[in-house]
Length: 278
Image (tube, rainbow, N blue to C red):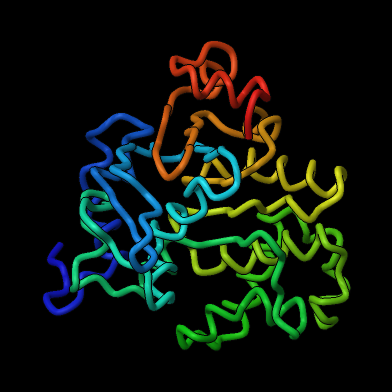
């Protein structure tokens, strides 16, 4: 398979990776971050971050406010490109072995392959149906049977179908907070991403809605690579296989979640986990 010469679309990059994925172990490294520095203007936000994120696992980023975890998350699909003063200092982020900050990478295609769910649910002022198919319509897909199939598949994938299947023409804004967040997850799934980034997706939800989103994460990890930023350490312990602890823009420690919470290697990690600061 040849790559597009003028634009390295992330879709083609990931599909190319699938050619050799059968020969590699399941849960191979999909995202690699190496010696990565990041700035907002003159202020450095990330310092020499190095990590591998495995395929079809949930990786949690934890740490106090302002430690750089959301900044790094937004770097993985180049959302920070939308901030004028944001810039890379050095290092790189690769998805499937390809540098996503290469000038030839199509950022629109990247953001389709690396979907994002934000802290505050943000359904469009459209019907539930149109919220789900929004990205597909932008891609030029208009065949009703294809859209109908995507709506049902993605709402089922987001554990929302049974709750809304009889009112798909009502506004997405009429849903409860937890339902709105799951609608946003369904919208992200519709364009068939490989990676799903979640920036504190439960911070505005009540415990019942939070439990539903966490159950959904457990279901989705069989098909997607998920990275979640959370302030809730109990949530990180419940949903993730790997946890990365950040402090003052530095990755202090990354390991299996059980080890991070039960026997961390770094004193700073232990202090944060035990509540001595943060």
